[in-house]
Image (cartoon, rainbow, N blue to C red; front, side):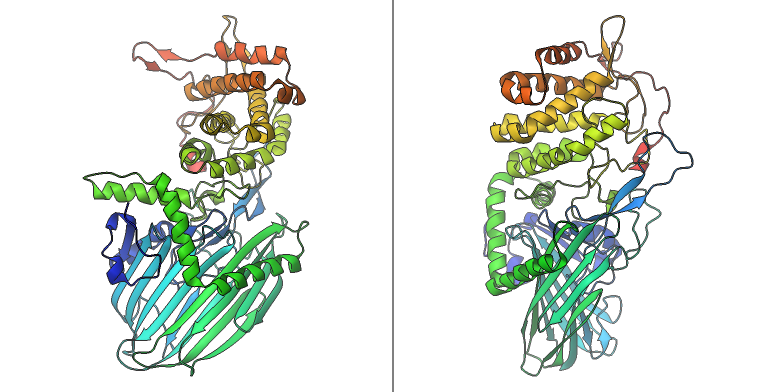
Length: 580
């Protein structure tokens, strides 16, 4: 694996590095904005910035996300049914601190106007930054070069930062640079995409706002989910003494403006440090949350942007020592593997009980919901790549075990029934055949617990969370299934992971996973009888689990020599994935 300086190097030097560590987009890619913004998203498992241009336009979908921060909305049905969820969680954008707008002789920089002489953005997978270089000639013929470097700090949970530099190309120009912290940013509706979020209008209500010198802060709350978010920004300005700075504020925006004349050979550098936190309204007062983020942003500024770059590189150097998969002879595949690993590295955190949503912190697709994909696709990698992150995600499931047990009781089932889609812990899918009927999610969680324990032998996690997750999911399967006259154990009326054939009897995947769940729970109980006793598990219950697992019906098609599904008795081939 190649190594290099952690400093903010010019593109010419950076271009000497192995390109499989970099993702590049140029002016030719401007018709792929939405895709680029997701690819260039930066996150640290707590804060996520979509890869929108610094100026905020043009863009496909703006977004600044904090893990778990969401609003609720009501669900409506043509006809109500027992157990239908009444509300759904929807991820919403926190105030956007990434915005920096530029005017050149009173003309706004917009790469769709004037002459775009050069434009390139590079995601550096080793440095963990997004770099941008643009040479733009305004419609009036004034040229500027813009360089920016953006990061979301992996070591410092609340912190993100951007360094923005402007210099004239040939003649002096009048500049106005506006650094914004903007709440309730307008998000376009995307009715053409069934995975798109149901975006509420102006979901944040202002509680406090402040601008003082080079610093600013916004505090907002949600109306229905009862959450409060605070974002603070601190700036550094480096430029000619003739440049002036002013600030203004409103409930939804804090702005720092730097203006003045810049001559060839001179440069204006604006560096912005941002800090994000959210908490339940009842848990943390607005002034306390504001003070917390202000201190974090100020501390990041005191340490400096170069220190953030150095720490970011060190964190990734350590991660890549474990995560890098080196391939010979196929640079494109090598780049793809490293890109995928990079997004996994930045998707979760080991130091907070949060999990990884279907889109991570890269966008608002699927309403920002957590699905079974986390346990079945993401955690199998993170268990070996970053086991502490997998532990955090499983601890998040355990923290929402009370809601899962309430859901099981509502459905007149035993144990726990975890949601197919959620942010706050309760079922958010209003489409029963794909949501509530997809009971395999419970076995998927148990499978992730068993895999994590096998890889780490983490007895503390087993005592604090793992065993209870295994026990409550095992109780679901034993209570849900039934015995046939022939002595086999069946699971009827479930939807498997293909999400196209709904409400089937004895789905192969579901039955195999339930069997693993039952056996894994029984093994764990036998190894830790004292812990199991506190959960009310006795010898009879353990025996019932093993008997059900041993007798689990696994359909098999002898003609095709492969497992076979059983009959579909309520819905068939209905394209359920559209309802995610």
